[in-house]
Image (cartoon, rainbow, N blue to C red; front, side, top):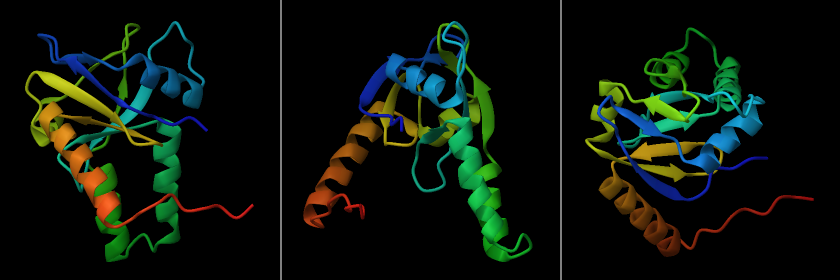
Length: 156
């Protein structure tokens, strides 16, 4: 399974585009089977819990949305989750150089002005304003230590 790891920084260009870090582009290619000479595809959405943009491989986003099928499609829980997950989600394709354009609404949600931090969090990656990304990393690390959290063991 491909995971997105590390934090990488880049700058927005004059057209509001930013280059996706090469390891993340490679991960997206592996997950969707795209041509290495072409761009990559993903779903971008404003996080409904954090001031960042979530970047989902298309297959993983569709798998996550499919889990909503376990809910009654007219229930309040379904409508809340379907709206919060899908309402702001947009498919994005990079150009051949791996650049994507971040829409104003997404940049505003994350407070991104000029510099961008890409943070891998396993199955997806997030796009942050760099100082907010550093704070999130520090806060999450401190919370994991304070709660003495560890990765659950899998039954073999």
